Structures are given as C-alpha cells and as structure tokens.
Amino acid sequence: MSLVHFFLEHREEILQSSIEHVWLVAISMLLAILAGVPLGIAITRKPWLSKPILGGANVAETIPSLALFGFLLPVPWLGARADRLAIVALALYALLPIIRNTVAGIQGIDPGVRDAARAMGMTGRQILLRVELPLSLPVLLAGIRVATVWTVGIATIAAAIGAGGLGEFIFRGLAMVDNRVILEGAIPAAILALAADIGIGMLERRLRHPR
Amino acid sequence: MNATQAAEICIEFRDAEFRIGGRPVLKSFSLAVNRGETLVLLGRSGSGKTTALKLVNRLLEPSAGEVRVEGRSTLEWDPIRLRRRIGYVIQEAGLFPHFTVERNVALVPQLENWPRERISERVHELLRIAGLDPEQFARRYPHELSGGQRQRVGVARALGADPPILLMDEPFGALDVLTRAEIQREFLELQRQLRKTVIFVTHDVREALLMGTRIALLETGELAGVYTPQEFLRATEPIAAAYVSAFRADVMPQTSAKRGGQ
Image (cartoon, rainbow over all chains, first blue to last red; front, side, top):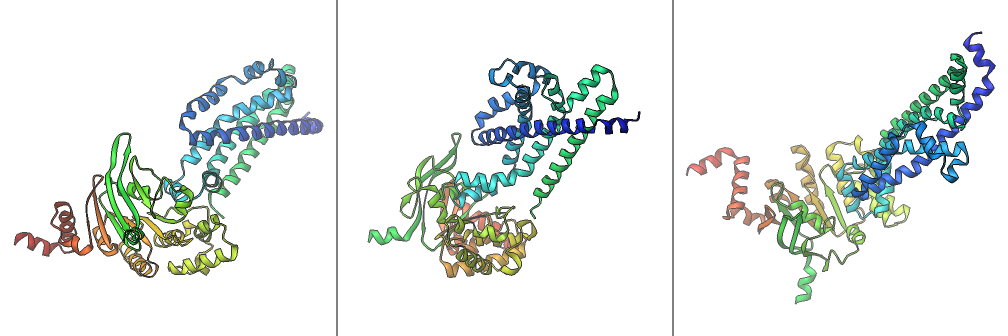
C-alpha cells in the first residue's frame, strides 16, 4: 500500500492529532508570551533583573525535554493532567527567546526617539504602549516565530506522557517499527512548523514597514 | 523692582552640576535665560551643552545646585507638566517612525486631550508654519521624507501645544549646507513672530552668531563666558578668540592669513 493511501486511510486520526497538536502549541505560546513579554519589559526597566530572569529561563532551556516532563510529573496540580503538564513545560521552553527578543527589541529603539517621547511629556506607560512596544514588535515577533517552530517540534515529545498530539504517531511507529506510522506524525508536524514560520514571518515583514 | 526682574528670567541655572559616576560633566553652571531670547550654548562635543539642555526639561536631574524654570526648581515641577510646556527638537528630529507626520505633530495636543477638530486645525497650521504643505505631507511617514523635511516636522512637533520654551539640540546639524541655511533663515523669521524662550545647542560658530541673541560658551563642563554676537566677534578671552579666528579662517582663508602676517 502506498504512503498516500495509508495517509488517506488514517486521515481522520491525523486531523484529530493535528488539532490537538496545534492546541498544545497555541496555549503554550500564549502562556509564554503572557509571561515572557512582561519579564522582558521588567529587565529593560531594572537591569539587575536580567541575570536572575535570563538565567532562570536559560536553565529551563538546558533541561532535556523528556526529563522536564518527568520532573514536573510529581508537581501536585500540574501532574494531574498530562496536557496541562505538557503545556507548562512547553511554555517554559518558549520563554527564553521571547524574553530575549522583548529586551532586544526595546533596547534597539533609537535613543533619540525615546528621549523625544520623554521630552514631550509622555508618561512611562504611554512610552511603553505607544512607542516601545509598537516599535519593538517586529523583533518580538521574530522571537515568537523561533519559539513557535521549536515548540511544534518539542510538542511531539509530549505524547510520551500521554498528552496527545502528533507525537502519538511517532511513538507508535517507533514501537511498531513502521516508518509509515512515524511519518504520519512527522510530516504534519513539519508542515505545521513551516506554516507557523511562514505565517508569522509574513506578519513580521508587514509590521517592519509601516503601511 | 525685584518682581519684574524675576518675571523677565525664564530659565535659570544656579550652580548646577551634573556628574556621571563621580566624573563631572557640568561644573557649577550658573546662567539666566531671559524670556523671549534665543540663547545659544556653544561648545565642542563633550563640553556639557546637551547635559545642560536636558537639565531644563528634567531628562536629567542636577547632582548639585538647581535649575529653575519659570521661578520653580525643576525638581518641584511635576516632570510631565514641565515637559509639556517645553518643546524639544533634536538632531535627526527623533520622530516616531511608526507615526505619520500628522500623528507626530499632533502628539502633545493629543496627550493634552485637545478636541479632535482643534488638533487637526493645529496640525495643519503648524505644518504650514514649518513650510510643509499639509495636503502633501500629513499622511506620510518619516522615512518618506528628506532630512530637511524631517527637521521641519521636528520643529512643528515641538511647537505642538504652543509651549513657551523651546530646547533645540543641534537641530540642523545633520543637514546639507543649503538646506541648513534655508531652515535657519525660516526659523529666525518664525522666532521673530513667536518670541519663544529658546535654548539652542550647537558647535557651529556661524550658526551661533546667526541664531543667538546671546552666546554662552561652554568648555569641558564650565561656562567660559556669555557674549552677544557682536561682543563674541571682538572677544579677547582665549577660548572665544580661538573660536572666532577658526571661524574667520573658515570663511575667508586668505584674509585671515594676511591678518596673521600683519
């Protein structure tokens, strides 16, 4: 049986897993952005926070993903549901590029522009919302793009703890020693990663040039 | 007559100092700027002139001494209120790249919650004053303008809510000679009508002589003298004289060489 036939036969299951996968990634990224952007902003305001925050995010990054899922398993509320745990772990991984790019984006703004904003009597909040965030958005989006592509890949490992997603096929395929089953997970995951890369990249380019 | 005298002075530095990590950038600086005058701060880079300027709108706070604006120390002012009374123009204009010309110029009136029609009227008026046709330029972004046009927008933005004070930090420094001369002339004309209190920072003697009602000379963070343009040209103090002779050599090399020979 050709691979195409094999895929068509399992299309319902593949679609179901892809939706799960997208959901895992989307919620993780949302959490990572909600935590990472404010942390990045905090670093630009209080430089001494840079070491503890970036250090912490760095450490999370160095833990092998499978081990991180294992470490989080005994945590009370988290360990109760596999998808919950997977989402938190994935968000932790995505944190570093988001924090870093938030900081880089804001610090990369022409100092003359920030001086002008202050000199015109904008409050700190107005400077952040009307000047710093809009101007750093392309750089921030670049960070989100990298993090999303990673997360799509790492999320396949979440199947190891039963969180679902396209990793299910990969682990099943490994157990059955059937490459076709592995590809049922790997190909849609690669397509998702590419789609995220291209989609966010387009958004980024549009924002880089006003209009 | 103390009261009228106090009313005349708009900005006053009183032994103002500014240090970065113990290193003094501005040393015991005292200077009074009168209402309606254009005071030029002349000095080379690193002489502390930009620092002095930033003390006025409290982008920096003095390490010692004080700066008084309209009779009150900058530290007693609410910084936001203070800054909205002071227009600020810098080199390369510091325009917001993600705002159209219109939004850039409208910024301070908008922060001050002017009604919409009044803002739009004001923006058009300011663009015309700055020599830009509103129909043509209001919807453009800064990157779609020439250097001279950006600088005009910078001036228009600084005048947004009609502040009594203008701080200008080498505003025309990045322009080519002809555009600079044109904008300088127009600004002089504008200032004749508006009579703002202006502090104008430059390292260009020609510009200082042209724009200033008085010239305050800064050297390594210290005030080296205050002159009217006429006094400055005749000054015998070594620092001022050095500027003048460099200026003359620039303008007419032969004459200056002859003089040196006499």
